[in-house]
Length: 437
Ligand code: F3S
Image (cartoon, rainbow, N blue to C red; front, side):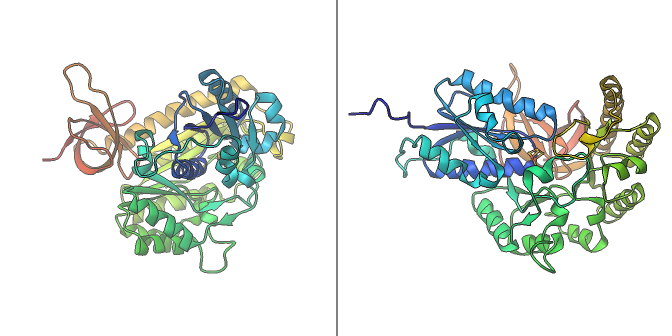
């Protein structure tokens, strides 16, 4: 006889992820654990027996989205268990339970415990292990996988909450990163994205000779996954020795270097560890060693004290830099940061206006980068297809190694395949292509 007071067992778990690639890497690990325990995992809002909400706290908007996802989960499945983890769980702490009505709040330090604690609260419905297959929704896991190599940051920039939410720098030993990549390779993954809070600081805590160079060299020598993407670096990490590794075409020609501001005075107030000149040198080095590389960036507008003149320097620098993509966002006051204590906060309407101006530069710059592909060939890793419009073919979407989104009408099953295409023209978000014969 079933115990009416026993909690409902879980079968389907929705993992909803906000924030950065590090969060995505950690969500993927949780998904793997759940699948191994016999659960079905979905990664978008849908009715489910349990929700894991992996939150972000980088801006107040991220906090708001995190709270919104809890309400959404409650609406979709009123009886479901809701677990909150990630950086918002870290900043807001256990008060989040009362605020949101979540069943469990697990901070970043205990993130590897999330699945165990959820399953202790609500045991999984057992599957017939032999018959069980990972669900189609988890299939994205087999196309591109995020592998965590590092966490934490010792830099303490004036605006950034991440040193508080993620703590001091810790690196995953090379052998463990290699093993994780090999495991993904065995699953048929075509691209791994190596992630970290501060990847350039990789290995500093592991001893001499353990930096990003050693990590990438080991990955190239000891794995065979077709594409390796290194998710982000800082200008001061870029040097000729490191870039020489990009002679291997398995390394994606994509560098994400956060700029934050194109004004030296603002960079100093932000306590960034580079000058504009150093950033320019890094761009020049990348372009001389890795022709046609995509450089993408993050830029913040409205940091406290940012004058119109400083903003114009940022605008001018972004036009000059030729970024393939820019993530532009307004400064947001964060607790536990020194910038929060500054007096000269930029009024919201001014921030809004600067944001719009810089977004226009971002659109133009990305378009200029994509237009250089028109008429040329490219190799694309295909992810998913939009259903066919009446009388037409499904439209496949995939990415080049330079992170350009490619659309291709095709009746073939292209998922998780790398194929060559010719680029025909631009779309709003990417490029349109045709298959090569
Ligand atoms: Fe957000 Fe935490 Fe990543 S604040 S950006 S999820 S390190």
